[in-house]
Amino acid sequence: MLDRRKFIAGAAAATAMSGVGLSASATTAEPSYLELGGPQIAPELMPQVVRVKRDFVPGSIIVVSSRYHLYFITKTGQAIRYGVAVGRGELVFRGEAMVGRKVEWPSWKPTPAMIERNPAAYARYAEGMPGGPNNPLGARALYLFQNGHDTAVRIHGTIEPQSIGQSVSNGCIRMVNEHVIDLYNRVALGAPVSVY
Image 1 (cartoon, rainbow, N blue to C red):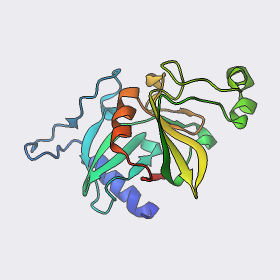
Image 2: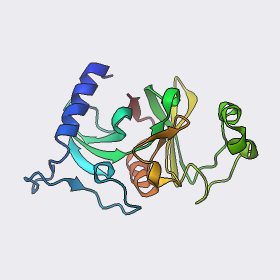
Image 3: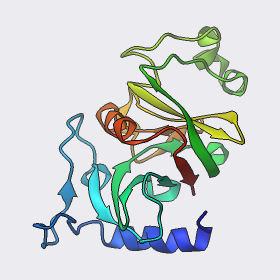
Image 4: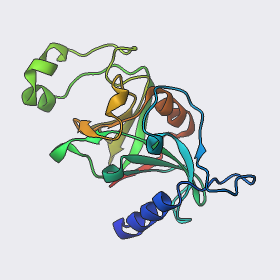
């Protein structure tokens, strides 16, 4: 596992070099965006191929909450950087986890803590909500586990793409639906996840 200091240095370097394309033909400072479709969000939050430190493990996910970026390490020294929304205030998740489950069009049930914090918004969903286009978890969800146990934290799509780049969730990591579908298709079960 990477220590926090090494990761932060790498994340800063990745941010500084995010405009550099990585394909053999990309030698200019033009960003190397992925054309995934979906709603328009700030350019710095659109999926891009970026350079990262070479000691990041291919297949892993790194989230830098303060910058609203999720990095999927595609190969040594390279990642796809996606924009995300993260938990607000004390609800932001930090730590090490692994992708323990992957679900297309996941169902959703607010946690008891969510219902207690905001019964007006969540009590009516106490029995859960089936997956579909109106579900808050969006098109795909990656379930984060620690020591074999579900953390209740997800990397998931959203029906509120305008929230990307903000600290607004109850602890989960939100992505534009088209972007989380792309990530879902790339990530293997058991992939390590580090959230800073």
